[in-house]
Length: 182
Image 1 (cartoon, one colour):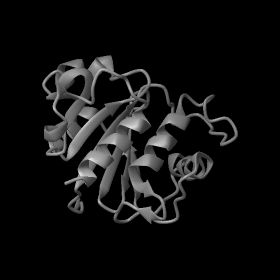
Image 2: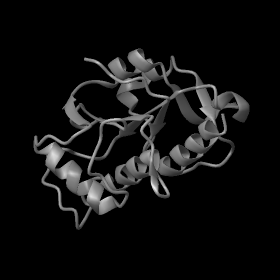
Image 3: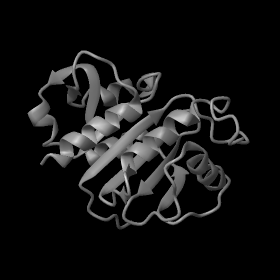
Image 4: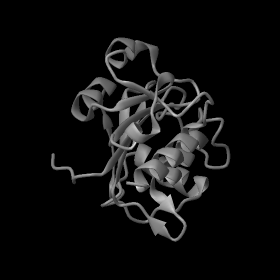
C-alpha cells in the first residue's frame, strides 16, 4: 500500500475504547475514553484557520486489536470539535468509508517496526533540541502503554517533555510546536 511521505507521524495507544460497542456521540466517556482520542485527532491536525496535511496519525485499539489511520494529505470533511470527530469515527467503526481514514485489524508491533517511533515517557531523555529531529512518536493514552506489548515497547528510544505529565492531546500540541520550529 502506498503512503504519502509525512513529516510527522503520531501513534496513539488506546487501552479503553472498544470499537465494537455501539457509539453515542452524546456520551463519549461511556465508550471508553473516546473523548481523549477525539482531542488527539483534533490537536494533531488542526491549527487556527488551517489544517496540517503533513501528519499521519494512527490509533491502536488494544481491546479489539484494530488500527485507525488518518492521513492528513487525504482526509476531507472533518471538523475540530469532539462530537464531529466522534460522528465520523462512529461511521468508520461500522464499516463506512471516509476519505483519508482507514480502519483495519492490525497489531502495534507492525506499526513500531515500520515507523520506529520514539516513545514519550516521563522517565525518558529530556533534550528538547533533539526531540525536533524525530518524525515518529508513540504516545500512550490516560492509561499509558499496553502491557501486552511491553517487550517490543522496551526496545524503543524513550524521550520526555520534562518532569510534568501532560495529557495525550497536550503532548501532541507540544510536539507539533517543537516540529514547527524547524
